[in-house]
Image (cartoon, rainbow, N blue to C red; front, top):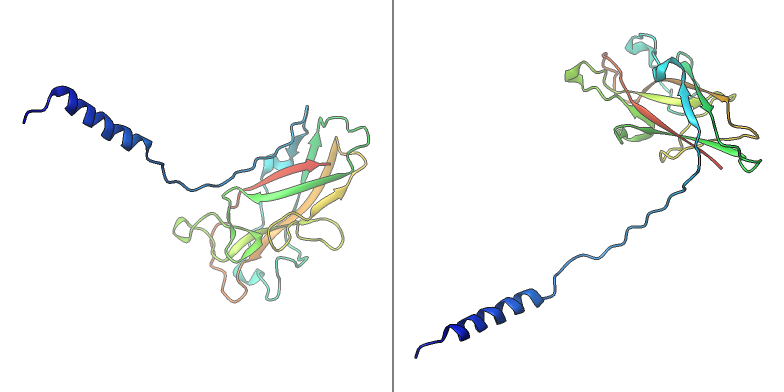
Length: 194
């Protein structure tokens, strides 16, 4: 029995149609996006070009019992200035500063300490990070233990204002020694006002 070219083509088309009409398998999930669009936003200026230099210390400087919550001397203050903010007509009552690690990673085991980004083989100090505090008395870490911001301030006016913060080095794991080296941590600051 011989097949005509027409019947062979028809069988191929039926096979292709069945293959194309099979239901694909995939996971189903939703992604929600939210945002605020503002006409204008504040400009942020940091003193020192955004660099904070700590003093050179020995491993003995990292005293026992000093935690990421401890108001401890030996750090440096820095200022954040909000400039050219839009008029709020009295609607803005709070300013929140949210400090986050540029790398996206806090120090291992503590979301109040910004990690040293230099590995030991790159000359980096080990078991050392950076903590940031408000300058209220007593000073308070700007982050909650889950890494969320607690640096919210009442502000009747917020444009052309200076906000001072205190930062210092911090031993990450209190049961381990500090290994000498260089400390470098990049921190992003987002400012929101509401």
